[in-house]
Length: 414
Image 1 (tube, rainbow, N blue to C red):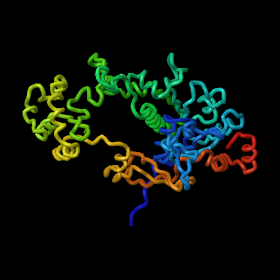
Image 2: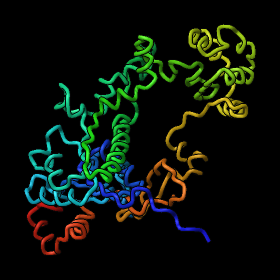
Image 3: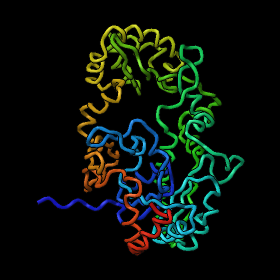
Image 4: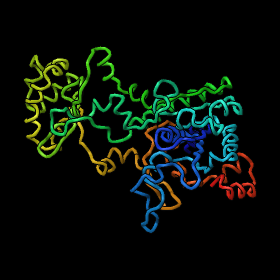
């Protein structure tokens, strides 16, 4: 007999989520995937801004658009939606009461924006000293830009990320380019989740909750990784290389007879095997190309020899031959090809989760895999606006049906 799956590691942790759009919701979605109870506070009648960021919208059983935008569905699985008007004094009192019963709050209002509602860190610590308070802003709680609004695309530009992304100016289509998803928001969300888990653990031991200060700009600069160090150590100002790598050659998209492939030769042994497959064995012993540092120095000369050879065979032939000898490479898939990829299918990265409006909703599974835990679909899809308002306020705060009816009539809850 098989044993029951172990509980998820964050079961018993409650997160009060006052954030909207992507960075904060991405953080709390990750925590929900790990078993935390996430109570998402939304505006009655409107909700999270991303609920309207479509098309596309989820279709109902009759093929008609619902009010659930695909964008919202991407970042809110496994949460409970509670609709409360923060501008109403009674709504503020409800939030404080929920904060008293939570382990952490996460918000992404402008610096100081929640103080006027009595929902800033100091106010909530007064009712729950162990509460961890995570704030996500464009530029952080300090510094000359702290009060400015920050959005992913502008942060990609200001952080230098766009100076590294795209083709060089002297090539057709050259110029700065943003990444195709709001990756700074997503990375900030992941750092926020990490900070929350660490601070919650500490608060359980000390009884005092820290403030966690996340800035999109800080995240973007921190994630420049090797490119930042190329500048700090080598004094370089890296430019745009398209798909190429600044420190490894050949490591870029290459045109083939019928399309493209991504070639990722990571060491000298792989380069020698690549040269053998490409019927260019002498290149592996040419002093210009034998070591990676030499290949980087003679990038243009090497690519001039490789590019015509890659165009002699179709993509599938190259992939089969290179994979057979352990040379990293891959197809450049469109998203329909991604979700048909045998490896993606084998890992179950697409989920079908029950949904009250459409029967089921397709979602993308969390990449986290923990031994001994359940790997089936999450129990709940991203919530409808206010789907859990009455249940949460009744169960956690003990509000009666009559009291909930009165708050609804006043527009405090939805």
